[in-house]
Amino acid sequence: MAHFDAVIIGGGAAGLMCAIEAGKRGRKALVIESGKTVAGKIRISGGGRCNFTNIHCKPANFYSENIHFCKSALKRYTPKDFIELVEKHGIAYHEKTLGQLFCDDSAHNIIDMLLKECEAAGVTIGTNSPAQNIKKTADGFSLNDGYEEISCASLVIATGGPSIPKMGATGFGYDVARTFKLKIVDPVPALVPLTFGEEFIFDFRELSGISQDVTVRCGKTSFNEALLFTHRGLSGPAILQISSYWRSGMDIIVDLAPGRDVFEELKALKEANPKQEIQTALATILPKRLAVYIAEHSGVFGTLADLSHKKLKIVADQVNDWRLKPNGTEGFATAEVTRGGVSTAELSSKTMETNKIPGLYFIGEVVDVTGHLGGFNFQWAWASGHVAGQYI
Image 1 (cartoon, rainbow, N blue to C red):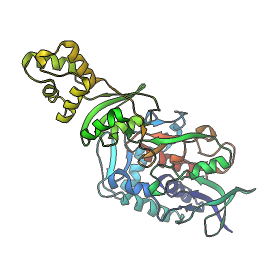
Image 2 (spheres, one colour; image 1 turned 180 degrees about the horizontal axis):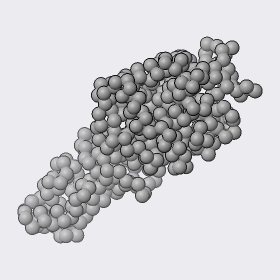
Image 3 (cartoon, rainbow, N blue to C red; image 1 turned 180 degrees about the vertical axis):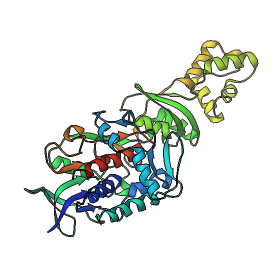
Image 4 (tube, helix red, strand yellow; image 1 turned 60 degrees about the vertical axis):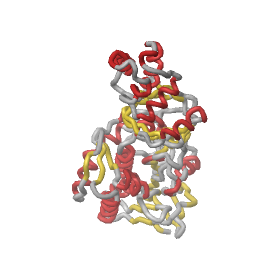
């Protein structure tokens, strides 16, 4: 039986960071990855350039049943800390928008960096190694990686959630948690496009491809980013962001012209050009196809001169206060992350160790901590992995 001080199941961002930190402390660490290669999600992230962190990262950028849980890890390992690691390896990067940092070249730069750090720290990595038969022992844990029996003092679950199953993502981490009778917050797709019923979907197909800067609200939460019409519904950064807060049966409210009072603009246009058709007037505010749709959807037709202020207000509200009820999401297949996971009530925010089973840790996406779009989920992976690596 091979023995390690720590075994980390999952060779993604959190798992590799955790192994690096453990190795730096002289711990004999093994990373077990069920896939053919490590860092699958890193490889495809950010359009292949990896949005590896966000310089504006703060606890308010995360969703959890316990909104305070992430504070300790994020404070102890900050975006600045990861940027220093990136710069140490001479990786060129740039800020895209809203504090999002991307590699100038490729996500492979980040993967190569992590693998070099693992090598320097003496970390062993095994791929095509599905962890099986995990058991608690008197001295720690035992398991099988498909090749041999392994024992360890500390076991870290860094397997992520079931989002993007084509990358090999599964609910394995939740199964481990259930084996040890730990609470799971129901996992659901997050940062995912929203879908709609027949009332909207045929119209949205006609609008497919249109992108518009909007403010989208759900409950008390709002985001100011781009919305994209697709043949299946709504996507784009604004919709992906709000999807983490949307629940079945809830409305979302879209302002298609944020910062503009469309009612006042339409009244002014009526004075200046009363013979103008309503959809033509709207096309000075919105893309033409969207303007036509809004006018038709409002049930208001004719020239501005023919329309009362009451009817102009109906049209304006469709622009500044468009209320929609999604019927669902595109699911885990296209979700960037998973909301929910191992309950933070089961874990120490200082160490990421479970309260009930000494030596068992959960880090990264498998935990009920979900970041906003824009590098925040990677920062949680780095931070939670770094924290656990100090203790395993």
